[in-house]
Image 1 (tube, chains in turn red, purple):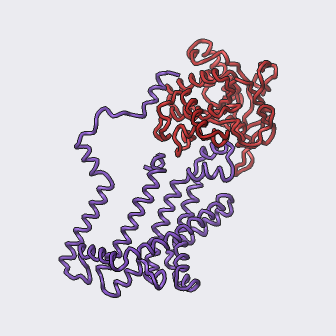
Image 2: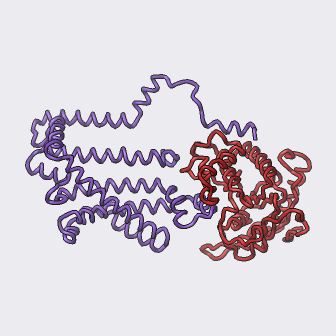
Image 3: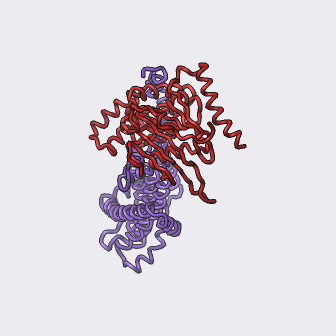
Length: 271
Length: 284
């Protein structure tokens, strides 16, 4: 179980379309002292409507994998494919929601922030873009702050607006890099529940990065566990049965403990 | 999505429960920058008037009222405002030329690491050099006239502006860059939609520093010689008035220099900031 186990194709739901596919992904970083391997031969794939969570301690390269998926980072080996096409650079078919609150551009109002990618990447007219932005913002529960500038918003509202911006663009896959990590616990719980609701409703394909086990179990339909230095696949878990309402239940605690053990025992074995 | 938290999240648009009591309104007025500035100006005028009356020597120190009278006089009969306009015209020419040049230099520097270091080195060398020190050289190269003034002006503006702009572009947060690249923005669209607005606080501050340098450099240069033999310019007006011992006119000329400087600062730059970076919360 602890050996790197490539995800079996048979584990994929065969009826739905494969959206995102990573094969033998290897990522290197250049440092002062030499080349450092961040991610070592990782495989996974995500089907339409699936929510795959990359979970692991810091240094496991989960954020690097997300950066490579976004096209910000060139892989040293292996391939990333979106709907069969090789990823060669950044593009609006994969929208990233970052952890940082300053991902909203401070010189644009909330609605203009959401309309911005529709204008520059989708080529919509200003009127059309604002209409779709308004719809996306009301979906995430932001209707009264449309014409405010981001600096007047709370952290939770900023992340909601960023999610609305990603939704409005209708990407093939949504990439989220610990978007709730800087929020307080109550807001985080609410955001997780809302994200699941929206994702189910719109059948969104999601690649989500986190280091919080409970968040991973709540949000993900599947977990992909990674070890640190370099990032290697440990194992995968099916968590499609768990949602925010299961927090604290016996089954939830059991799987959380199993995930913890899978991450922790690996560390222990290396020490 | 009608959840409690989303609703409580939506309350940043706070509606006042009652109007401000008049005492606090008066208090807020006394705290405003406009009021404080005017108060300082009035105090300076009063002190000046008192000092001049005690001294009682209009050749050395004319009183505030005399200088004011001279200002009106010179504006109506001696072409003080025309001189000021002449100065501003040359200034604007040099200033815009320098901004264009600076923008070009910075674009090259942003695109290429070696050019960036090169620009930084040259700007760091020339920035501490008072531009007016180049005037003798400019006169040697370009002769007496507008060309020399423009040369000195451009030197006064381009280096501080380039340094500030470069610093601004380098300070663009990684997240802003990634957001722009995520939408597939490249080249000039990336610069226009991401880099320039993100660096705008630094760009404005560079323009402001450049303006101040340009204004004082121009007046200093004009003290040496007018824009051309026919129309003098403000510095030349001051110099001529001193030669003829019209000290009240010297003061009127100096006041014009100060007033124009303040006006541009308060109206142009402050206004530019108010509609951009202050609204965005990038500057308080």
